[in-house]
Image (cartoon, rainbow, N blue to C red; front, side):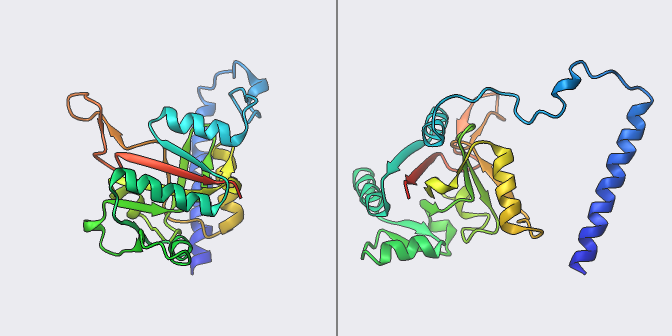
Length: 219
């Protein structure tokens, strides 16, 4: 049944695209630069590494980036940050992150199902996108849809292998990982939550985290 639904959706999408193409033929304009139609990148790549590029873009957006040479350094850095900011508890649904801290007898990070009492959330990610400084999340992760956006402060634990150059690379990785079972929700988190809906005044942290951190482990 699931495969049949996927086939129907694919056929419907193809039908819509063909209808649009047919309609455009009646009032078609020449493409001004046809030679760029097959190009994938419309921006210049610089000489920075993926790590440097992501750190630059992410911090420019208001995120806080912490580089860690290994997992032990990440845990020490997080403990120091928590002490300085008076964080007593960090909530997670990610078993791998939870076990990492439990194995070191660090009670700072604890499992939670009660989002209403959560002030700081921590989770992994699908990818880090260097060019835009974005964190790619999906509903297939243990954190689900709620934790990364519900907590006023969100921390992402990522590894160097999670870095990709652009959004296209990120989606290629998702397709390779999930095959035909792509997660129902894919989200690009680019810096703290921002909105200017009310009187065109920029407000941070209304529809999501007001502070975002990325701890990048070089492993």
